[in-house]
Length: 184
Length: 117
Image (cartoon, rainbow over all chains, first blue to last red; front, side, top):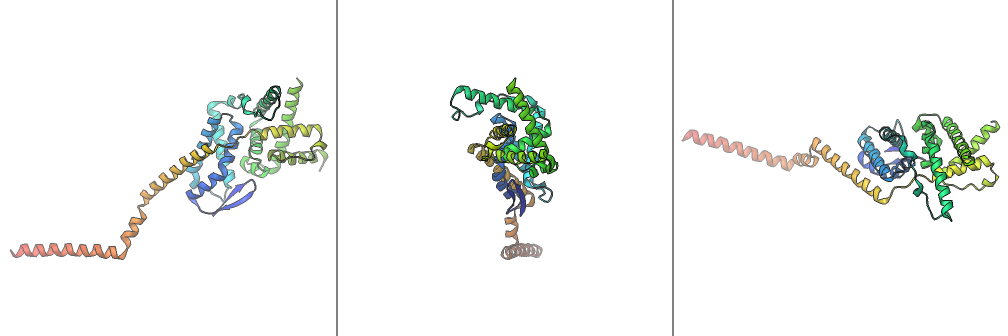
């Protein structure tokens, strides 16, 4: 028996070793994928990175110690490092790539509104990439899976109140940049 | 707690709700800046995508294959436990001992026979 962390609290999972990995995969793979797609818009690249994250996790699973960290903290630390490595190799330009088609079309009544919404989204994404690394990480972890500040603090090795301050400051910063851009 | 801290605290609560996709019924009562912040929060919360069932199943199959391969390797290293258990069964041990004794007796008989010729 060992504990794994979830945004809803701790949960006990029966079994150990490789069999338990399958259970953890079911629970965490969609969350990790959401985290990756927040940062990497290219779907194929996001899939490749998610696969790489779980392959690394599988290879290191014997070394995972639930006494030291929850599975959530452990897997998201691997995910974070994998995405950082990806940027080291491919450069940062990729996450400001345009993604006009990503927005849905049905909810906007006219093509003009669709275009405005897509442009707003693209610009906001650009502002996010201009944040410093710590601010970006906090934003990604918060909005990709709705993580609690405590979980984010564990992954980023910060205090919970520090994460709260970073989030408040960062959202305010984004809002300011966005409003200034709209008023240009 | 001063006014700024209270505002930050409230903003954090609202950010959590927006990140979780929850609606804020009291939104009309919020100030313009907070509403703008929540609008951005909702937009960011809409960016992540869920994995397709196809990808989820494919990756699971790949990992399962690795698990099976790893188990095979582990088994090869330790030796097959079924084989070892079989060898430990008394009936099997008795049979092997019987055959061994028979072979030794046959060799002794052969030596004695050849010596007396």
